[in-house]
Length: 128
Image 1 (cartoon, rainbow, N blue to C red):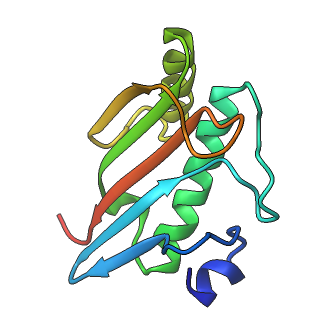
Image 2: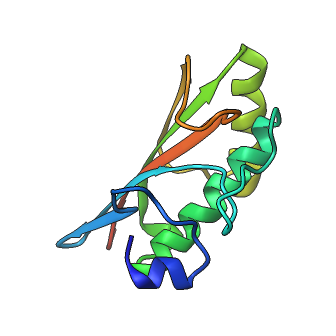
Image 3: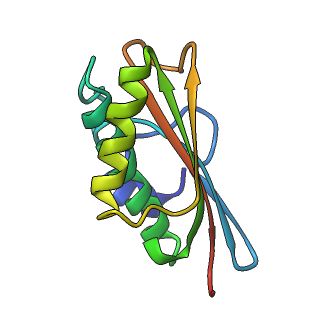
């Protein structure tokens, strides 16, 4: 994690970077539903967790000099029943005001934090 990410209010990460810039591309690690203090947001609420992941993604993208318009692909990982996938997807759709970048929605068995239901990673490319 770099100092700009920490100053922007993201929680510290154990032993890895939030993102890497390679030329005009930003590769963003899976954003998790943690607040600035490292607390899990929205236990058992996939919609709320999806929003927190996207809010964190917005911060990472901005800190590295990119904009949300530069997002080229999202992968949305969701734990639990089909209803959790639908709830998370509805939150993503609302967050992007109905104009979601190309995305893959995946049902998964488990994520890294106890109680975590959603994680979102992204590929971001400057220019159209």
